[in-house]
Image (cartoon, rainbow, N blue to C red):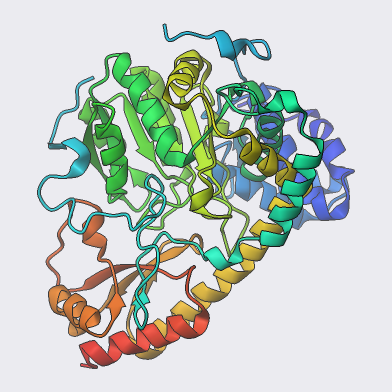
Length: 510
């Protein structure tokens, strides 16, 4: 085992000199970069938290938090009582990238075993299928309920939080300065200033490796999925794996590109490596930071195993980071893409933070796929609208996007707390699983309130829309308990409380 010697603290001294309010994040960023660059090699043993804190002149808590964060993300590994080492999961250095503007001229240059469902529309997978006018590719279900009803279906943000005044100010600023030439046909990858702004923001907030030249602006994660699907199909793949439970919409999107989908079962840590290895697929879609719908955060071991699998089969992972910014009990776990940007396609959007109707998202693309993705984007729509991209770039660079995220985080945390309180009061014994994050929870209602069919039917008769967990996968537990995926972000705390009370009255206290 390599010793850390003087390497670790020397690399981290600049971070220790950062302003106090940014010191923790700066320390984490410096550690990530040191691991990715190889300056801290796999197997290097790091100093104890006490020793490193003393060397850097920072609090021990700051170092402990950094070690814990990077261990959760897979950069470090730790054995209780035996120290902390650099893990071997990260492959963070980018390969060569095309010269700026070169992608405008780029041309487009496995078989899954087990049970398949083309588009996931067979059997029970597609019951009540999905979208009420919301984001098709990122778990948006239920875009508003009729008057007098309470709609707990997950996926919809609070659209009243859209920052109209700040967005309008950004629009005016853009229209005042945008040159006429900018209104021509855009670079299919996206406006350069937006790609620069997004790359900086994603590096800072989500711990990704973001080269603006390899960032493609797209119409949400839905388009990112279809772009990748077309490219993989052209390369000879015929199937892609999706998490079980997971979003049926992923299957529909890939079906539109000619790919079948294979459901791959999860446990409490993520995809099981043996199942993945036996599946025969060479591409999977995952939501590792906050799995939809189960609410788990993938363990560091499963993240590393997934990347090992991708390298072994020469495959790719689509990371759908649909709500990665919304963590309420600690800093969000960094994106999987930061560990291996050549195997992970990272996709996100503003659908949960601003509004799905903006149709603005992004994908970070491995070098080997970039030319084909950009050419497919060019032939699909010639690029996203320039004015919308310029406004988002202005919004990000002036700090308004960070302010919006903080506002949403405060609001959604309050609503999650209201939901937990209402469940405890009106449906005692209900357990809530998953991490404290995102826009939904998994509620496990005791069997005495069931059976599930009766519970859902009586709730609907009382004017409350709910969605069962079993609608998002293949598992059909027969224990009589009611498992619900409850969305709360779009509902005021008083409405949340009233809705749960109405459910309790409808199903009866037994």
